[in-house]
Image 1 (cartoon, rainbow, N blue to C red):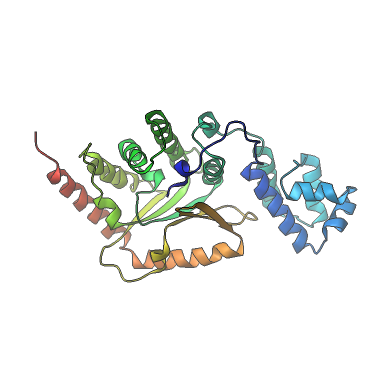
Image 2 (image 1 turned 135 degrees about the horizontal axis):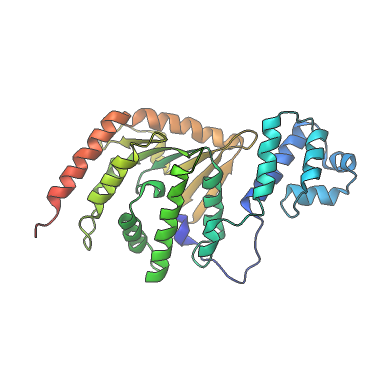
Length: 302
């Protein structure tokens, strides 16, 4: 179940630490362990009490730029790029994302994922049931959200569709657009919309046009595919510059689960096997065009 409508934002709930601050804290904990330092020894080297170090690693307390620079020196981090990545993460942690304007419909969990997606260099998606949000047309987004949710008002459905469209800006951001690799099960492209028959044809056109972007790759998993790891369910793998680990989003009827670090490697291997089982890119685009043409002939004639 897509996570944007499974969780309801509570306006009066206390704000949780941003996902960027949590990722920074996790990275600092890993660097401390790699340096062979205990929490107490690292805190002592900084002239801190242990609770302060613990709060930084657990994203309860922010860290100042000068302290981050000194802490990385204590940990023996000399790679300029690594230091720059962590400083950028620290700097961005306090920034408000555009999605916060939709806080009445965007849950903390969904906001976390949008933040991850915004910061990622690469996203690899396996979508067995729906076209990935980054490749959806506006009509498809609204129709699928309206069709699945049972608790959202028409206004909330419209807002969630707007959020999904806004997310797609990462594919065309200046300088470093997100590299997106999408593998979609062919069955997902046979969905029909009784109230708006042209929706799937528009979606297939959008999919074909998006695949022409140099940073977007689309593959289809054919109906005739042999068994593969993707049969266990869909997931999205987000990748970042070192030293930040990859993060995997697993969606399920209970909500969503995040997997990162060494555990994410299993999903990277699974994705390679799914990719090898899917149709080659050129064959996938041919099949998308065929389905687009067929969906046009299926539409009722005026």
